[in-house]
Image (tube, rainbow, N blue to C red; front, side, top):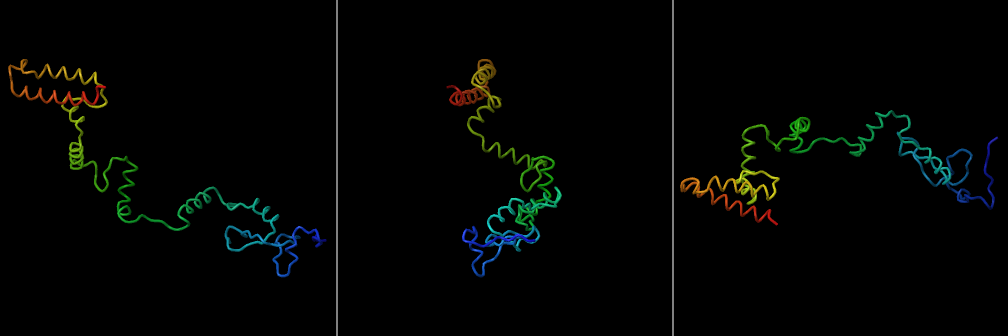
Length: 196
């Protein structure tokens, strides 16, 4: 014997009693089927029509990935990142894909579009580094120091070089005098940067 809901004045789903209304697709329910739910993962455009109560039950039990293995779920999620459409490298990056993949796998030491291992690339990179040196970097180079340094190290190096290149220690040599001027200029530049 099938169960059926009696239609009376206190029926919580009076919309089903209207003519032409869709009835809930849940067995033994005669309420209005106003809420749609997909029938399966493979047919997302075909729907069951449920009343609110049965739509909630159906949604609670719905598992889009039911029956799929872990690998199939992973593949599905990856396809979803491109909206289920194929993707491919474009333009300049597509032409250099192999080059970039090799560099990523074997280290990030590359310049875009050229081999960083070549001597020519290294020479050009060194020229660019030389061209954009700041006054502080130039002064450190004159004193043969490399960052990080503090003012105590700078002062000690300055004294050492000043003694070495002082004209009195070199018999009045003009080259030593010019080198001392360069060292003094570098020291004053670094003094302004580091002495606080």
